Image 1 (cartoon, rainbow, N blue to C red):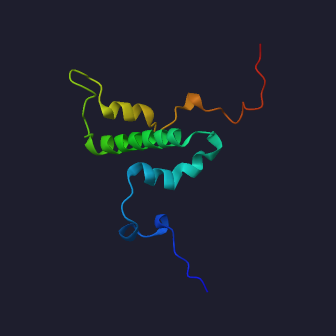
Image 2 (tube, one colour):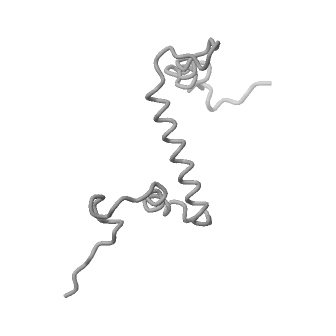
Image 3 (cartoon, helix red, strand yellow):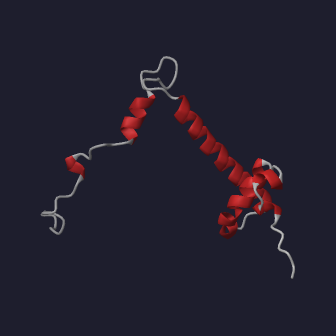
Length: 107
């Protein structure tokens, strides 16, 4: 009876040894790119770029304080941008009335 030895990528981190970021990204996410016909270097670059974008959003989320302005001398703040992007109430004029959905326009 042969004993099964798990591959190093399936061992707990303490036993497998550290992997660099590119290796971890490739191991965990490269299979999602298989339909894109990219070289391994292109896959690494794409995954690394996406990772940096996600990290930037996390950093931004933890560093922005309520009332912070976009820059020196700006009167527009991050709150203004979020209020513009995250609409709580939809304006009534943007909704189609159930009475007019199937009606044709009159000339």
